[in-house]
Every structure is written in C-alpha cells, then in structure tokens.
Length: 172
Image (cartoon, rainbow, N blue to C red):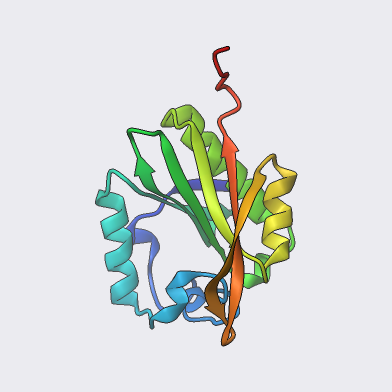
C-alpha cells in the first residue's frame, strides 16, 4: 500500500533516490525534466518552490516509508477549477500498479480537498502503458496533438487526457 504526502526538502537527503531518477534517461524519457542535469541543490530548490506555491502541489509517493516517486498536481487554475497531473516513479517499481494508485489518490485530493472540476494530462504516444493505466481508472482520451514533442530524436504525438470530478453534475 502506498501513501502520498506533500514532499519537503527534508525528504531529499542525498544524490540517491529522487535526484538519481531525474538523471536517468529511462525514467525521464517522456518527461520535460529530461532536458536538464539535476543536482541535490537544484532538486531541493525545486521542492522548496513547489512547497511555497499556491498553484502547485508536489506529493511524494511512499511505499513502506520509502520515497519511490512523485506526483505533481500543477498549474492549478482556480477560476476554472482545473489542474494538470504528472508523475515520476523509480523504475524498480514500474509495472506494479503504483502509478495508477498514485494517480487515483492525487485526483481524489484534487476533487475532494481542492474542489477541482477537472484534472488533465498529456501522454506521449510512445508511452502506451501510461495511457492504458489512466484509462483504467476512468480518465478519457479527448484528442491527440500530432508531432508535439521530440523523443529519441523524432517527433511524436501527445494524447490529451482528462477526468471530470465524478461529483459534478451538469444542470439540464
């Protein structure tokens, strides 16, 4: 069973773990953070900035007390009550349903604690496992940007996905 809690700089102890994942091309292959080198100092600075922000939440994913990944609920638009979700998980924990559960917990926080109407994300077309995982928990595919990013030296598409707060009902 995983737990999710807001990540703090005290959770970032050394170059192992989070900093190592950020510099692993396999882990960040489909993430925008792949374009820069990460150090303990830059990582701690990022976590501190997220902690101070009113428009972003950075949650650590913990398994038996061990930090194994992160979920970001970011770019919160308070007027339209929507936010973007992103994830990063240590590759040794891939394929265990942890990312799916972490997404579910993050959307639960967004809907119940923040009263958001919608969460959304983008998934590169070359990452079908990520798309499949979120579709299993009720997200829906709403479109695709063609040639939206470059992965492995070639343009790739990006699926747009979203989930509407299930407690929302449209007035008729």
